[in-house]
Amino acid sequence: MYRPARAGAIKAMRGSIDFWDFFNLVVVARGLGLREATFRKMFEYLDRMSHPLIIVETGCVRTAGNWQGDGQSTVLFDKYISSRDSESVLYSVDSNADAIAQAKNLVGDRVKLTQDDSVKFLNNLTGQLLEEGKTIDLLYLDSFDIDWVYWYPSAAHHLKELCAAIRGIRKDSLVAVDDSPRDGHFATGTSRKPHFVAEPAIGGKGRLVAEFAAACGAKLEFADYQAAWSGF
Image (cartoon, rainbow, N blue to C red; front, side, top):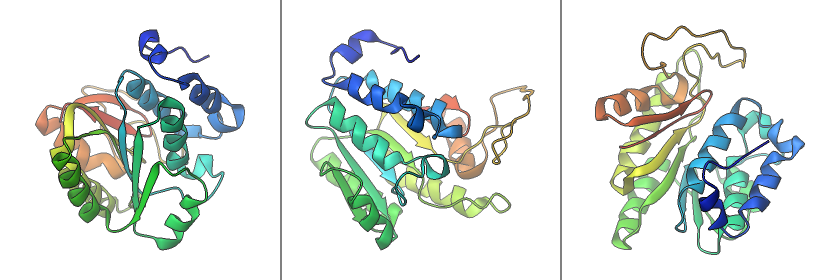
Protein backbone atom coordinates (compact mmCIF):
# COMPACT_ATOMS: atom_id res chain seq x y z
CA MET A 1 0.00 0.00 0.00
CA TYR A 2 1.42 3.39 -1.02
CA ARG A 3 1.94 5.99 1.70
CA PRO A 4 3.26 9.41 0.67
CA ALA A 5 6.59 10.48 2.11
CA ARG A 6 5.15 13.83 3.16
CA ALA A 7 1.43 14.02 3.76
CA GLY A 8 1.56 17.83 3.67
CA ALA A 9 2.84 17.84 0.13
CA ILE A 10 -0.01 15.62 -1.01
CA LYS A 11 -2.55 17.85 0.74
CA ALA A 12 -1.24 20.83 -1.19
CA MET A 13 -1.80 19.10 -4.51
CA ARG A 14 -5.28 19.14 -6.03
CA GLY A 15 -6.37 15.68 -7.11
CA SER A 16 -3.05 13.98 -6.40
CA ILE A 17 -4.79 10.91 -5.00
CA ASP A 18 -6.38 10.36 -8.40
CA PHE A 19 -2.94 9.74 -9.84
CA TRP A 20 -1.96 7.30 -7.11
CA ASP A 21 -5.22 5.42 -7.58
CA PHE A 22 -4.33 5.14 -11.26
CA PHE A 23 -0.73 4.13 -10.56
CA ASN A 24 -1.73 1.48 -8.08
CA LEU A 25 -4.19 -0.22 -10.36
CA VAL A 26 -3.10 -3.82 -10.74
CA VAL A 27 -2.90 -3.59 -14.51
CA VAL A 28 -0.52 -0.64 -14.25
CA ALA A 29 1.58 -1.40 -11.18
CA ARG A 30 2.20 -5.04 -12.05
CA GLY A 31 2.54 -4.23 -15.72
CA LEU A 32 5.38 -1.80 -15.02
CA GLY A 33 7.53 -4.72 -13.90
CA LEU A 34 11.15 -3.68 -13.37
CA ARG A 35 10.24 0.01 -13.46
CA GLU A 36 7.46 0.05 -10.87
CA ALA A 37 9.59 0.79 -7.79
CA THR A 38 11.66 3.51 -9.46
CA PHE A 39 8.73 5.25 -11.14
CA ARG A 40 7.09 5.26 -7.70
CA LYS A 41 10.18 6.95 -6.25
CA MET A 42 10.15 9.53 -9.05
CA PHE A 43 6.59 10.56 -8.32
CA GLU A 44 7.18 10.55 -4.56
CA TYR A 45 10.08 12.93 -5.20
CA LEU A 46 7.87 15.22 -7.30
CA ASP A 47 5.16 15.09 -4.63
CA ARG A 48 7.52 17.02 -2.36
CA MET A 49 7.48 19.99 -4.74
CA SER A 50 4.54 22.34 -4.25
CA HIS A 51 4.93 24.51 -7.37
CA PRO A 52 3.66 23.73 -10.91
CA LEU A 53 6.09 21.32 -12.53
CA ILE A 54 8.10 21.27 -15.73
CA ILE A 55 8.88 17.69 -16.75
CA VAL A 56 11.05 17.05 -19.79
CA GLU A 57 11.47 13.61 -21.33
CA THR A 58 13.42 12.35 -24.33
CA GLY A 59 11.79 9.47 -26.18
CA CYS A 60 7.99 9.32 -26.09
CA VAL A 61 5.46 6.51 -25.73
CA ARG A 62 5.20 4.49 -28.93
CA THR A 63 2.69 1.70 -28.32
CA ALA A 64 -0.47 1.93 -26.23
CA GLY A 65 -0.54 -0.41 -23.23
CA ASN A 66 3.07 -1.59 -23.47
CA TRP A 67 3.66 -1.00 -19.75
CA GLN A 68 6.29 -3.62 -19.13
CA GLY A 69 8.10 -3.18 -22.43
CA ASP A 70 8.74 0.57 -22.39
CA GLY A 71 7.13 1.87 -19.20
CA GLN A 72 4.68 4.27 -20.87
CA SER A 73 6.44 7.22 -19.25
CA THR A 74 4.63 9.81 -21.38
CA VAL A 75 1.26 8.45 -20.26
CA LEU A 76 2.34 8.37 -16.61
CA PHE A 77 3.71 11.91 -16.68
CA ASP A 78 0.57 13.16 -18.45
CA LYS A 79 -1.67 11.56 -15.83
CA TYR A 80 0.47 12.97 -13.03
CA ILE A 81 0.47 16.60 -14.18
CA SER A 82 -3.23 16.42 -15.06
CA SER A 83 -4.10 15.16 -11.59
CA ARG A 84 -1.77 17.58 -9.86
CA ASP A 85 -2.76 21.11 -10.96
CA SER A 86 -3.74 23.22 -13.98
CA GLU A 87 -0.29 24.60 -14.82
CA SER A 88 2.24 21.76 -14.82
CA VAL A 89 3.53 20.76 -18.25
CA LEU A 90 5.40 17.93 -19.95
CA TYR A 91 7.77 18.51 -22.86
CA SER A 92 8.48 15.32 -24.81
CA VAL A 93 10.77 14.92 -27.82
CA ASP A 94 11.30 12.01 -30.19
CA SER A 95 13.08 11.81 -33.55
CA ASN A 96 10.51 9.33 -34.89
CA ALA A 97 7.49 10.93 -36.59
CA ASP A 98 5.35 7.80 -36.17
CA ALA A 99 6.06 7.75 -32.44
CA ILE A 100 5.00 11.38 -32.10
CA ALA A 101 1.79 10.65 -34.02
CA GLN A 102 0.99 7.67 -31.78
CA ALA A 103 1.73 9.63 -28.60
CA LYS A 104 -0.63 12.45 -29.61
CA ASN A 105 -3.49 9.95 -29.46
CA LEU A 106 -2.60 8.84 -25.93
CA VAL A 107 -2.05 12.08 -23.99
CA GLY A 108 -3.68 15.43 -23.30
CA ASP A 109 -2.94 18.91 -24.57
CA ARG A 110 -0.55 19.80 -21.73
CA VAL A 111 1.96 17.38 -23.22
CA LYS A 112 4.04 19.33 -25.73
CA LEU A 113 5.29 16.79 -28.27
CA THR A 114 8.10 17.68 -30.68
CA GLN A 115 9.81 15.70 -33.44
CA ASP A 116 13.48 16.61 -33.34
CA ASP A 117 16.95 15.46 -32.36
CA SER A 118 16.82 15.34 -28.57
CA VAL A 119 20.16 17.06 -27.91
CA LYS A 120 19.30 19.97 -30.19
CA PHE A 121 15.81 20.16 -28.71
CA LEU A 122 17.07 20.21 -25.11
CA ASN A 123 19.57 22.95 -25.85
CA ASN A 124 16.87 25.12 -27.45
CA LEU A 125 14.23 24.36 -24.82
CA THR A 126 16.59 25.11 -21.94
CA GLY A 127 17.44 28.48 -23.44
CA GLN A 128 13.73 29.25 -23.88
CA LEU A 129 12.89 28.26 -20.31
CA LEU A 130 15.72 30.33 -18.85
CA GLU A 131 14.54 33.38 -20.78
CA GLU A 132 11.14 32.85 -19.13
CA GLY A 133 12.72 32.46 -15.68
CA LYS A 134 11.86 28.74 -15.53
CA THR A 135 13.79 25.56 -14.78
CA ILE A 136 13.29 21.80 -15.15
CA ASP A 137 11.96 19.78 -12.22
CA LEU A 138 12.38 16.31 -13.76
CA LEU A 139 14.58 15.41 -16.72
CA TYR A 140 13.82 11.86 -17.88
CA LEU A 141 16.23 10.43 -20.47
CA ASP A 142 15.07 7.52 -22.62
CA SER A 143 15.56 8.41 -26.29
CA PHE A 144 18.22 5.99 -27.53
CA ASP A 145 17.55 2.23 -27.50
CA ILE A 146 20.18 0.32 -25.56
CA ASP A 147 22.31 -2.41 -27.10
CA TRP A 148 23.28 -4.47 -24.06
CA VAL A 149 26.41 -5.77 -25.85
CA TYR A 150 27.61 -2.38 -27.12
CA TRP A 151 26.19 0.08 -24.62
CA TYR A 152 28.42 3.06 -25.43
CA PRO A 153 26.39 4.87 -28.19
CA SER A 154 23.26 5.01 -26.04
CA ALA A 155 25.14 6.01 -22.88
CA ALA A 156 27.06 8.74 -24.74
CA HIS A 157 23.85 10.12 -26.24
CA HIS A 158 22.21 10.42 -22.84
CA LEU A 159 25.25 12.17 -21.41
CA LYS A 160 25.00 14.66 -24.31
CA GLU A 161 21.35 15.19 -23.43
CA LEU A 162 22.21 15.97 -19.82
CA CYS A 163 24.90 18.43 -20.91
CA ALA A 164 22.43 20.13 -23.29
CA ALA A 165 19.90 20.63 -20.48
CA ILE A 166 22.12 21.16 -17.47
CA ARG A 167 21.81 24.97 -17.53
CA GLY A 168 18.14 24.55 -16.69
CA ILE A 169 18.58 22.07 -13.85
CA ARG A 170 18.47 23.17 -10.20
CA LYS A 171 20.19 21.43 -7.31
CA ASP A 172 16.89 19.83 -6.32
CA SER A 173 15.90 18.87 -9.88
CA LEU A 174 15.76 15.13 -10.54
CA VAL A 175 17.60 13.59 -13.49
CA ALA A 176 16.48 10.04 -14.27
CA VAL A 177 17.68 7.58 -16.91
CA ASP A 178 15.78 4.49 -18.05
CA ASP A 179 17.42 1.12 -18.78
CA SER A 180 20.25 1.73 -16.31
CA PRO A 181 20.45 -1.43 -14.21
CA ARG A 182 22.62 -1.26 -11.14
CA ASP A 183 25.35 -3.75 -10.34
CA GLY A 184 23.72 -7.08 -9.59
CA HIS A 185 20.58 -6.35 -11.63
CA PHE A 186 20.62 -7.87 -15.11
CA ALA A 187 18.83 -6.43 -18.15
CA THR A 188 16.80 -9.61 -18.48
CA GLY A 189 15.10 -8.81 -15.18
CA THR A 190 16.76 -11.55 -13.16
CA SER A 191 18.71 -10.44 -10.14
CA ARG A 192 21.47 -11.78 -7.98
CA LYS A 193 22.38 -10.52 -4.53
CA PRO A 194 24.85 -7.67 -5.06
CA HIS A 195 27.99 -7.35 -3.00
CA PHE A 196 28.76 -3.63 -2.90
CA VAL A 197 32.04 -2.28 -1.65
CA ALA A 198 31.06 1.27 -2.69
CA GLU A 199 28.18 2.97 -4.49
CA PRO A 200 26.36 0.56 -6.83
CA ALA A 201 27.72 0.65 -10.38
CA ILE A 202 25.20 1.88 -12.95
CA GLY A 203 25.15 0.25 -16.38
CA GLY A 204 23.22 0.58 -19.61
CA LYS A 205 22.00 3.97 -20.79
CA GLY A 206 23.01 5.71 -17.57
CA ARG A 207 26.58 4.48 -17.30
CA LEU A 208 28.28 7.71 -18.43
CA VAL A 209 25.72 9.91 -16.70
CA ALA A 210 26.57 8.01 -13.51
CA GLU A 211 30.28 8.67 -13.99
CA PHE A 212 29.59 12.35 -14.62
CA ALA A 213 27.33 12.49 -11.56
CA ALA A 214 30.03 10.99 -9.37
CA ALA A 215 32.59 13.50 -10.67
CA CYS A 216 30.16 16.37 -9.96
CA GLY A 217 29.28 15.14 -6.49
CA ALA A 218 25.62 14.66 -7.45
CA LYS A 219 23.47 12.60 -5.10
CA LEU A 220 22.25 9.20 -6.24
CA GLU A 221 18.58 9.23 -5.25
CA PHE A 222 17.83 5.67 -6.33
CA ALA A 223 19.24 2.92 -8.51
CA ASP A 224 17.54 -0.26 -9.66
CA TYR A 225 16.51 -0.75 -13.29
CA GLN A 226 16.26 3.04 -13.58
CA ALA A 227 18.62 5.46 -11.87
CA ALA A 228 18.19 9.07 -10.78
CA TRP A 229 20.27 11.84 -9.28
CA SER A 230 19.85 15.29 -7.76
CA GLY A 231 22.50 17.88 -7.02
CA PHE A 232 24.00 18.53 -10.46
